[in-house]
Image 1 (tube, rainbow, N blue to C red):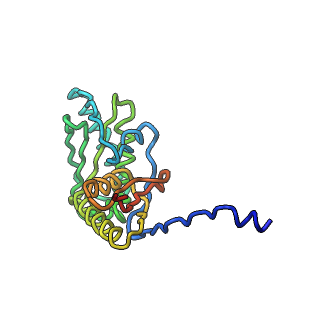
Image 2: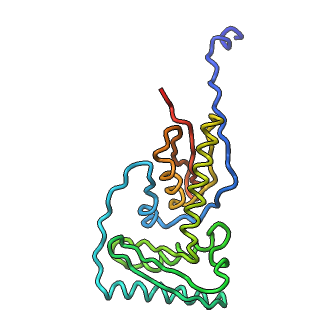
Image 3: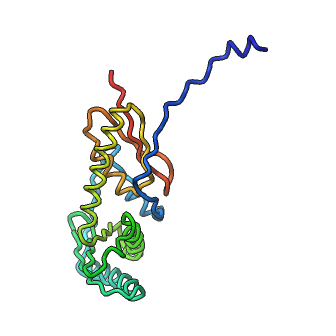
Length: 212
């Protein structure tokens, strides 16, 4: 029996995967029909989406439904918030901006509250709507500031992976934030990225490229 055991090949040792815990929280997963639209990350070239042509009445109804929902939320929170909306026909996006005091409450930790509010508003706007309308909520330019933070994180992790030659696994992120990481490192000569796991625990992995 011992001779047979000696003849069996040993399992190869798995390379250690380092977990990075400074980044971000999991968010509530979207409904299936919405998830299909938002889950396309930049791991592969993205196909151009056909934007649905909408009439003025349909756009006005979407804005009215969004404002009715958000106004109810802010009233329940006892907050005075100015709501500005713009429908970008070329992209099929409904951009909503909040203006007021103590907007940090609406942003929440790492944007968690803003993301949840965006998710719920998206459900309201897309109910009974032809085609998918991407709803984007923002306040105090948080989205751009967050994007810059994630891009800096991506570059820092890429340098760490190149230096240590160890694969790094980031904390779970929503699809939008994962796309930022993928895009930031897409042209990097030394590392590559991919996503793994299921929502809401899907995360980005950064690994050294196999150089020949």
